[in-house]
Amino acid sequence: MTLMIAGLKAVEVLDSRGRPTLAVSLRLRDGRTVRAGVPSGASTGSREAVELRDGDPQRYGGKGVLTAAAHVNGEIAELLVGRQLADLTAVDLAMIKADGTATKARLGANAIVGVSMAAARAFALLADVPLWRFLSPAGTTPRLPAPHFNVVNGGVHAPNRLDFQEFMIAPLGAPTLAEAVRAGAEVYAALRRRLADKGFATGLGDEGGFAPEIEAPEDVLLTLVDAITDAGYSPGRDGIAIALDPAASEFYHDGRYHVAGESLSSDDMIARYEAMVDRFPVWSIEDGLAEDDWDGWIRLTERLGPRTQLVGDDLLVTNPAIVAEGIARRAANAALIKLNQVGTVTETLETMRLCRDTGWAQMVSHRSGETEDTFIADLATGTGCGQLKTGAPARGERVAKYNRLIEIEAAKHLPYGVL
Ligand code: 2PG
Ligand code: MG
Image 1: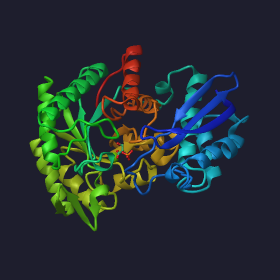
Image 2: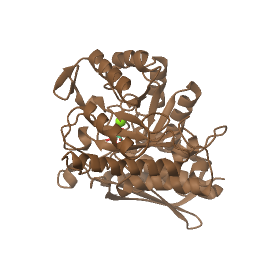
Image 3: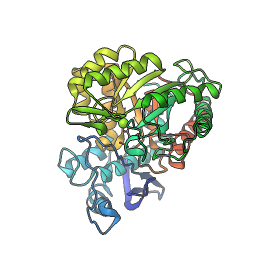
């Protein structure tokens, strides 16, 4: 069914960190309205689509998004409103063409992705199907993803001494999504008790994980295994596994990795990960090496790829061309999927298709700056990719996504878990 947009409006609102972002609303001809909230990262890859910020130091320290909002309300609205739009691809391609840059820098990836997400919701409404169903490509089986709860935050997401950005728990062995969420929340509660007993502060980082003053990643892993056991679960792939996102580009300077006071080469870093995988139930490592250390990534994949999921985030930035390069060079074995890294739903689905066709794993992801929008829960479910990370089982903007998964499961019984 073709879409005719009657009105399009973006306003500057706040994200979960208190920074400006866009809320886009799209009105259909029958008066129904759909909305989208645009996420925003802190540890961004250098090849991501460009988030347009005003740069006016008088407003929000230069981070205002009035220009991007004006692009939605002006040029993009002129382009799309009142036209017969055959499908989502037509909407996205029209915006890509009008933008005219390779990185969406002129209109702003934040403007474009907000409209793209709202348009996807509009098409789902017209087809009278849930968003996850609309986003499900022909021939794929929808599936509830294994949630990856980020329960300890470091790096640029927390003001502590911890260099690794994210320590996630993934209830891979849970029978259903609802049980996985329960397991995540119970371990989170057990972890709070463990940290408090040891005298650590239990304040939270940007994604709702605890931000204790622990320096060595191995010490966090030890505590996590204890918390999993305290909560009555078994650490490992049959129970609750651990996933890391060190976000290594952030601690890679002058060709060395700076971790817990040590200066490490790529090979030292790989050996350190190998020791972690030997000792702890770490099943997945995202951005273990820096985005410009491709040779290191290739060696990491050779060495750990057979038994560990190695996810490219900053390395691959959800971009189909860069993911294709990663696949060809065997520089990882999985991709992180973030809508705003590439800037449209259509291109995101293209990257996901590429991964599926090649047998690469994929994990859909939130950003550290989020809104209450739950689009990614539907995206992960509809594409059947098997994995979603969207923060701790705490903080409204994170919990909204997990709650959306629970609602989807309650409405329709779908298979659960990693592929
Ligand atoms: C990441 C993300 C999300 P940010 O590195 O994977 O957790 O962080 O949104 O800051 O890039
Ligand atoms: Mg990452």
